[in-house]
Length: 493
Ligand code: NAD
Image (cartoon, rainbow, N blue to C red; front, top):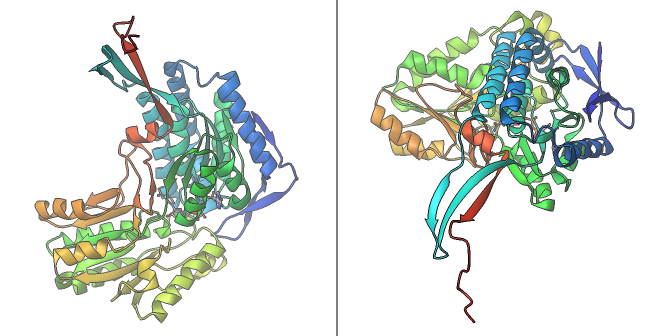
């Protein structure tokens, strides 16, 4: 069993109270690691180290951006060299199939490479202005925000870290990072990589432990200039309240209950397979999951028949054996998802397949749930309204385009959504009406480092990835230059 520590001010340390917590493999129930638990004091020490590195030592912040870019490339190469280990850690820690974990690490490598090159691209602008005060040039520069607290969820343990750390480091910030307690291992390895690559002391700090204490401190502490958070809407709301302490910058990537709208003229088999990707990839533990299928009435029966056939054929098992679906992240999360399934049955939805824990063979020891489809769902049902964050999809039918759009938008969330149709004009018309930040036409879930990621409504504030993802971690400064210096003549007497 591994023993792991916190990384504060360039050193691996125990928590100040000497407490530890266990990391458990949800597929087998085995304890994989004993991890040092940070206290609020440890979080404060990490913040102080980040603050010193940003405001006093300034080595990273003032580094030539070419050199900082080269350092990010070196980090990307080191991740690549450790790819097998990182993917294996996410698979055993989180429960996702190994091949999916490998994709996450590849995406993370490209994320570091993308931001390494982006900081060398031109940015900002220069404006030739005449304001009534004479000829001036006004131009903008981007500067790092300062000390960034970064809090991530457990569903993409490595990748959610990369989405925050790559752009914030590229911009020259110093960071305190807190991964979800239930899945910390790949990020501990990531910090070993940072150390090995020679990031200056205090620039990256890792604290692990309960969100309610150390996460809360990171969000509220006045020495933190920005808090960026990916997780549930409920915790996001608390972070926003805490951040008000010093009006720190806030980035929030929150939950979703995303619609997948399928019209009768869509390629049916294609729509079925993408709908599977939309809801069963990563065991449905995906913020953007297409958890509400909204289908045109005339193809409903055939679609449900084909979807159920494919869902029933899915293999479930140990993530390292590369099944179609792995384990839920933990016993408590599995029980939460099972409770939603019971609620769906009790509220009158028609269970088409799944609907229970999967306990065949070796899986009896782990946290597995069969892919679950509920048909004949209505807007008032809990399973239609709330984010389940598991392999559970609801099906509703529509007759007209207007009805489909209204159903799609009938949610306080606005993270993602998709439309399947052979009619290109309709696809664009419907997508335009869907109030969500990430949308797909005739596909579901592909994500790119170049394209901004984030939600409308209660799914968040700000964007990760792409140029927007770098700008989140930058302040914009306006510099105005008087081209005709001298007496203004405003106060003549
Ligand atoms: P969570 O909100 O329970 O926890 C997320 C992180 O916040 C963890 O590190 C946790 O320790 C910490 N935390 C908990 N309480 C806190 C507090 N009071 N103050 C500060 N930090 C606190 O979410 P989760 O269960 O880890 O992840 C699932 C949720 O994340 C889902 O709602 C999912 O939709 C969302 N998510 C969103 C995106 C996105 O890009 N929008 C991506 C992945 C996951």
